[in-house]
Length: 166
Ligand code: PNS
Image (cartoon, rainbow, N blue to C red; front, side):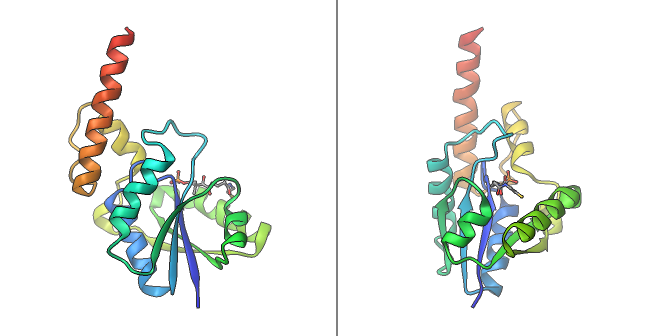
């Protein structure tokens, strides 16, 4: 009975992420969506907010749970009885994802399963969504409706704060 983790920063969660979570939930017994912090990224939402948003979106799948994590992903796997990492793969991600998968396997023996990103979401990333939203573009096509609304509200309040600082 495979228990898989879908790790990510999910800042914010996109349709592409949810597609990968759903497809993973169809082929393994249990899925843990682990919300981490990518230290190289400037976050829009706090970890608690990201967990809350994901939990609401994932409530539709009975074998999916959402939890925060920090530290090494392989340590999280060992502590939570997880035997597989599941990730969506876009063409641009390939070499870095392969490197991480090989590092994680070397560190712990935990293997990574890659699911090709659905073609309709292949160009979508949270970083691009944040950039487009911050510069006033429409991101509603890439996010669940409630996440899009929260993203636009957060960007508007950030932009207003930045304008006050000038
Ligand atoms: O959505 P992201 O930003 O691609 O998610 C990246 C994340 C959080 C999954 C990745 O940075 C990660 O696994 N961090 C945990 C730290 C770790 O285990 N680093 C070694 C990776 S080989």
